[in-house]
Length: 148
Image (cartoon, rainbow, N blue to C red):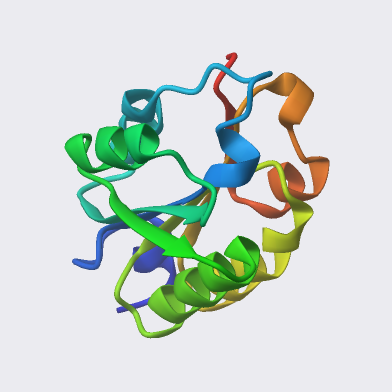
């Protein structure tokens, strides 16, 4: 498929939604899992919806996430590294046409860049204006804030 076709979302890979749990689910943000999925849905069929959490995640958050259709990835290591590697691999292997990352962490800028280089549309979702990363917003093809 051509680069233009992938950027338009014409491929069959779908949307990969990758959520940085520790940076998105904080007291200062009122994030709703349905809102995250709704934004990703705007870009096509969701092929992967993954929420990355650390070992301190509450059972209630894990259960609610699974009930909302998210695959929960819990790691005792660095959540950012696992999410970035998984998202970059999915984009590089052509498993997704659109990469959506929900975070406020600039660590994901390289993952967005690699995905764009591979022809994926890229989207950054900030948990709120206060939690928005200009680096992510400026790197992604499109960006959203959950306070918009």
